[in-house]
Image (tube, rainbow, N blue to C red; front, side, top):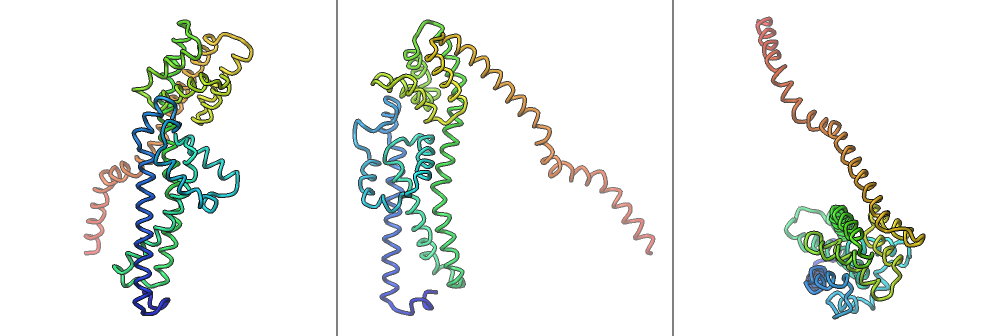
Length: 316
């Protein structure tokens, strides 16, 4: 298939094989480094203790980012809006390391280059595919490879936000109990973070990070705003706005949390009632596609058979 483009030359074929092998090798190293950076047990332990910052020991992700530093200017976009959008998504996904952004774009570039190379490597197994169609498939593979890291990141963000949303009602109830028992805001957050470390580790680590930031000197309002930014949930943003307003005007934290907890319960009940009201509409599609055809077959089928018999006898 490459005869039309390159001509029959063993040197060209050997060069293509060597380039394809080098691309696959680089792709494998990049995937292994990315998986090691995400699933590193030391990083998870540090995340539970101090909020996920890798200051205690250099990680593989930091080492990979150091290797990618010379080429980061070419793979990372220059537009500040796009970088901010991806960086926000990485933070919402729980990837708060400074090396997360260059590693993400490096993996995106790697997938975009490796996907068409894999298509070209597999081309000898499909000799009937023309060169033009092969190039189109390689271009589509490159486009799909560029989309895969973004799809993975979006799914990770949705998964983490779903876990935070599920854990938030329990955390809010525990926070109300701790504050009403006489604890301050910082000790209450630490107690809630310790209680949620097993059942809901995502939200527990976020609350522990808030308390750690306040201990090192970050203002309480700024630490709470950082929590809202890292999670990206409207419920937590509302709680943070309420706590900041309470600290600004000097009102009681326990009363404000009790009022917000009651409003949040009402909001959850309204959301549940809304989902229950949509059940009738959602059931239309499975009824139409699955139940009604069998119903019409049972009810109308015998009549159609009798009509067929009558018309057959009529023609005779």
